[in-house]
Image (cartoon, rainbow, N blue to C red):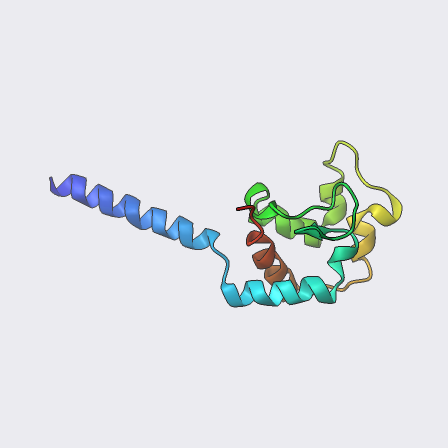
Length: 122
């Protein structure tokens, strides 16, 4: 009985850690939302119908479709991520091109990722 109870406690504790890791810090996400506006991400992306009308720019459900690691890669190494796409964007449509002039800082990347994690369809 004690072994079973101990195993259940460990599993519950691990599940709690996983869930906590998946939930972004609300203050960091709020900062990310402001940065989304500051960096004019809506020129190429859409959230809740606001922003560009480009077909591949919708971010409404990105928080459930893209891992935290891949969200970071999209912001830090977009050319690497674009290369994985079946039809990579070119020229001014490429995120790698758009981010060249932004100068997003590492802390800002974390904030933007936290915000993107909150984008889930309900």
